[in-house]
Image (tube, rainbow, N blue to C red; front, top):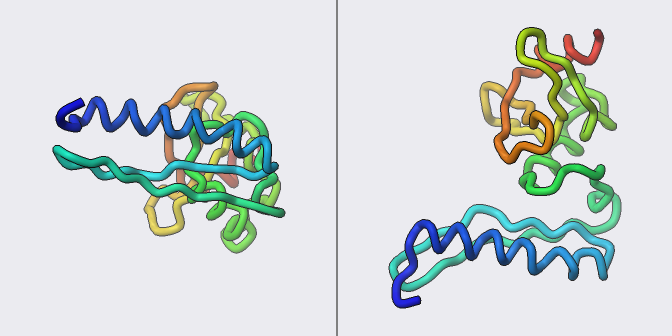
Length: 135
């Protein structure tokens, strides 16, 4: 590789994430690779390790930002969401079933959800999620 392109940076990011997963299992922690930056000659990314109570992440949240997961655990009850809501399935009218995977406290639509095992994420307002959890 002589220069780093966007495609190569994404591939490096995915490979770094995959490489760290056996290490995470060995040490019983959660390791997440955050957003990266690249130039023609370098690529860098942020690696986050969650330990203790924060490392108890429900199954099925692979590929989800560690920041979103931690935000949900820390802030869910403040916004009236269930503390154990990570990984719960909600049904949004006319859209279908989604799994709650995280929280973005500074965003307009704060709850992050995923449909099935899709890599794409959808965002919903706290009120929409509260209503979906009631039904």
